[in-house]
Length: 196
Image (cartoon, rainbow, N blue to C red):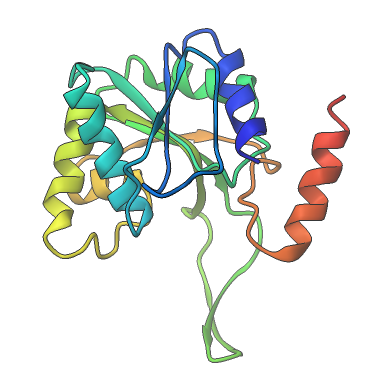
């Protein structure tokens, strides 16, 4: 999954470098592309891993005003076109943004395994990645959430929102789903097989 994800980012010419954040003891991943840096500074949560990765970028001399794209390797169906559409929509934006999908299904609120309410879906979106923000503001937003263990920070946009900013929503494709459940692997494999 990581290699499919990396291939999409490598194929987008505006992505100057790629930093893959993994656990410090990860011995599995070995990369030989000069644009790809393996950062063994992953944390116990997504937010901590992104925070650590951003800090390592600053230490390595990446300017705080550079744009960063944060992506889940579990979204291995992203394409260079998807990445390019996000860059196009956000590079002139004051805040940045994320790929997301407007909610099409009826949204239910549950108690245990029973539906207790139907929620309005008009203004609901399903967040995807990549998410694109400037390094400095994103690091500051995550730093502010760090003191409470990044509680409630489920993606980079949630940290930016907590800082008072409103990220741009850029319509992403339904196929950019997060491989989470066992059946997702078969679907992802079939979709990736259809690309060749």
